Image: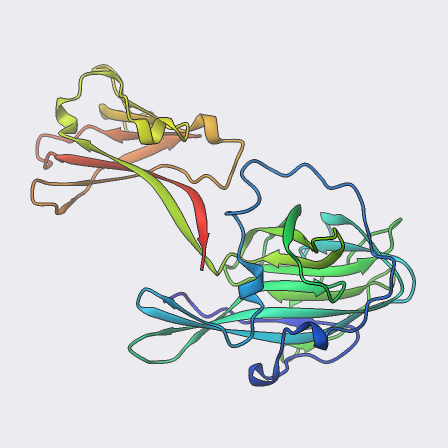
Amino acid sequence: MRPLLPVLALLLTGCGGEAAAESSSSSADAPATPAGVVLGPLPAPPLATGDGWHTDFARAFTHGLEIDHGDERITIAVDHLGDLQADDRRTVATADPDMEEPVAVLPLTVPQGRFRVELSRAFVRARTGGDSVALAAAMRLRLGTGRATTWDWVAQITASEGRVALALVDRETPGVTPIAPSAAVDGVTGLTGPGGEALAFAAAGMGPGAYEVYVGRTAAGEAVEVVIDFRVLLEPTFTEAWLESPAHEPPGILTVPALDEVGVEVRRAQPDEVSATTGNPLWFVIDARQNRRDPRIGFPEVSATDEKGRPVEVRTGNEGFRLWVEEPGPADPIPVRLRVAVRTGFTPL
């Protein structure tokens, strides 16, 4: 069970913290959006961004949805945090509310009006019972009442303290005032930045880290949602390979089709190679440098088992995107199978 993280919300207009039982994500609840939301040129997304990498937002914002996941049951609650107010034409921005910079200004311009902010929360409970753990799964700004059918990556925001913000800011001076920890009172408070911007923030369900921002568009291309994905409702998927009888592999590069396809090279070390940190002889070197441009592809993981399938400890180290496995010592058990795995995607729950 993952640890409980508090959910915080800050808004300028409207009310916050509605009871989950009274929340709704239906389009009928969204304030009418004045015509004139403009979607500008989209930024070039990072590698492997798009379908298969983000949460299923339609499910994440379906209030009352229940998801069976292994030995857990997840119940979705959608809270209406309030409405962001734009008194003139504004630009949508995302930021770490605890830091002045950077502010990611999205390619969206919205007219004067009120725009609904919602938070999807996942209540995770063991199927055997007990207390549930509440995690913020996604946060969205509703720009219209249409149904989003496609999602475009528009930004990434790094949350040093695990909080992220959505704001309506002036296009020329898109600053966001940092939020002091004391600003949150009972989870809801109010704040106005130097440019008079409206601001909404939430604590990400996965804590400090980098989070992706997407714009949802209708089949006609109308921008109707901005969503920050907290990755709670994603299950990582792995590409893996098992090396049978690794002690018998000769020095040199191994042919491992599954890993070759994702740009991970496995090499049996030469007899004179040693660890850069301990000086111990090396056994295998696993090179993932081809994937360093895409941080979503995980760092290789190594594990081992003995002849009865029991775990065997292996000593590893790394230098950048190269991971090495030290050769077993004279008193160490010799693994008969070595597993190399790398995260290569996500499956939405």
